[in-house]
Length: 167
Image (cartoon, rainbow, N blue to C red; front, top):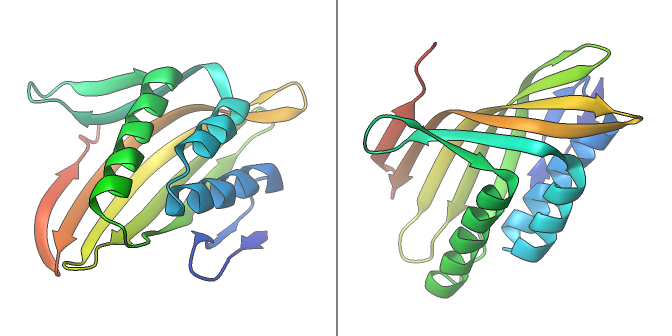
């Protein structure tokens, strides 16, 4: 069982997931904490399959939003740019691997992450998602991300909550 942790940012987990996958999450959290959208895009592009998809919260019509890698990266860049503009305080991303299922050809990781930032008001967001990794040659590649839940609070008061259907 691999254990990865770092002070202030990064993944804090106990998991049997391969070290390359654990390293990906640790790097991703560091890049998100530093709002480095270029580094984030390079890391994700190097570690995702060409047909990667992200299944996110439903739109206003109740249909889950499905994004390709390029669309996912555009959204991340937009969010990071907005945060850089709006909030100069350093945010913290801490991810935890809640569960992993490993076979010879795939690794399914259920993650939770807490994001916190804000100087005037404390904003905290908790997300849970499932990543599916597949073996491509000798390397593990991220095939899909499916968001399972999200909730947010400002100064400890809930502002948003969403949970995926159990289908």
